[in-house]
Amino acid sequence: MATPLSSMQSPESPHARGLKITEIFTSIQGESDLVGWPTVFVRLTGCPLRCRWCDTPYSFQGGEWMDISAIVDRVCEAGVGHVCVTGGEPLSQKRCLDLLNALCDAGLTVSLETSGALSVADVDRRVIKVMDLKAPGSDEVERNHWDNLAFLQPQDQIKIVIADRGDFDWAVAQVRKHGLDRWQVLFSPVWEELQPKTLAEWILAERAPVRLQLQTHKYLWGEAQGH
Image (cartoon, rainbow, N blue to C red; front, side, top):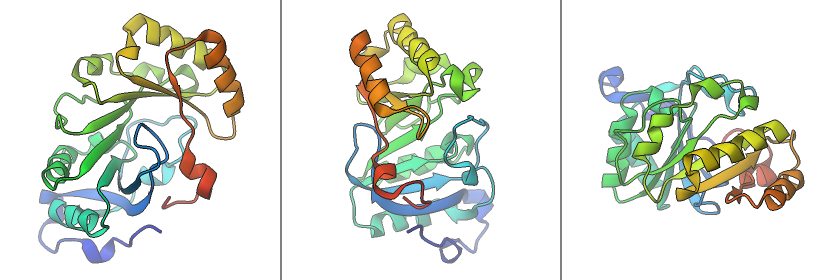
């Protein structure tokens, strides 16, 4: 379950040192190369995008301010070695970079889920970046920040959410055009819109150098918040 945040706020100027947080909870990582690991999720509030199929619109606004040190303490108290900073779009808050640094300094395996619409140039090199590229079916394809490819490292991953055949063909074309298979490329079907079996068959028929990704947490708990 999501952890109540009201008791975790710093009484001293949280706006100056902190971040606006929607929720912090521990669950099973359902996506990326880290799938299956017990993971603390830190969901930051706010996102400049409005993807048609977004499954976390509740994170667009609201939230509570927390000091970065309080966030790190809460993550460490969970007793697991993995933490995922997500959103919304976590990089829409500038202090996200400081949080990522602090989590790495705490000795955790840190991953960042980001939309690909904002620069990842200054993200700590110890962080595993899971970066989206937005296909046409998201209604945000023009927001892709292609310069980000220059800042991806071997451990980083690219995720493309696929709504239909048009998205699939677009995504395969981008893999080939930009040589995206230098990294792990994850094709993920839109939940309850594109059948995973259909996407798997397209990948096999095309011999696409990509990895099928299913949202394991949704198969376990559905779309319940806090998972």
